Length: 306
Image (cartoon, rainbow, N blue to C red; front, side):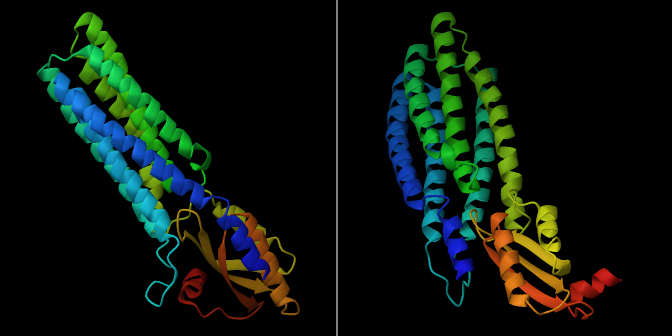
């Protein structure tokens, strides 16, 4: 009963309903802005606005994918998917990171092309339209800021929107400079600078998502700290064959073999260990108890003794 309560408490650290509303609001605002930006891009013959609209359109797709992932979290377990579809949140975060890097590649290619072949654009229109983008993208990023460190999917959405706001701000600056100086090369230079910034902010997300996809230890979990928390229990002799991985972007799991001095209070010790693990970010713990002197028959145990 205690274990169920702990799981329930951690699950609500992130308000899924509030996040759903944030995603829907962000998607709606950005769809409206992309239509306006693309229209003005065609009107002013600005490849900068048109390409930025394409950039924002890809990010809308990413927001939709992230929203879908959180909806999939609610799907019940089945005989085919015993953990439900929670892992989809990790896969979506990985896709988001890859999409961001692809977008960066597109920005660089377009910017280099415009450096080689400068295009005359209307700086005033570019600056005003991009300024609207700064407000909308900045506000959308703000919607996710309180949960961005609790879930890498939310962090991905936040990075997408923050990168968009930065991109729009750079377009504002380039539009103003072009309006007063007619230095058309400023636009692609700003694009390349923004691409570098986005790459640095996305690289960590990509590595983290890839590691979780491969069942690596999540960033918010310290393997050695968990091991110490378990082995420091007075009834525990040692802990081995321990594995930690992510069930989703919000839930972590652990399996371990725990050697006890005796079995007198085995179930109480197990519950105490699970309570310690919950406090360290482990929602689902499967613990196999062993008596001191008992031979572990698992293949990994035999390998460790060699």
